Amino acid sequence: MPKQSKKQASQTKDSSREIRILMEEQRSQFNTVAEQYNSIDRKLKHQEVALSKIEMEVQIVKSRAGSIDAMVSSIERELDIVKEAILDSSRRADRLEQNAGV
Image (tube, rainbow, N blue to C red; front, top):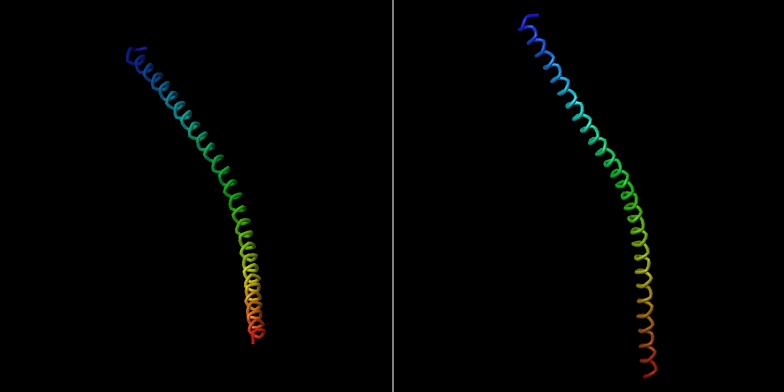
């Protein structure tokens, strides 16, 4: 085999080896990216579940707040009735005092 052919064959083997090494490095980098993607995906799914739970709890709080608002309104109405009854009693007492003093 001529010197040039041996040299070319050697260069071809070296080039093939370099290509295989580069391909393996690329494969390794792709695997790393895929692992990172999977990790991020798992974290996002966990966050979605947590967010869903929070949204449900917020709805419960809103519902309870609505119930509390209704109770407060009812108490305010009853308080207004009591105030009116006290004022009415006070007016009656004043009238009775005035009539008694006459």
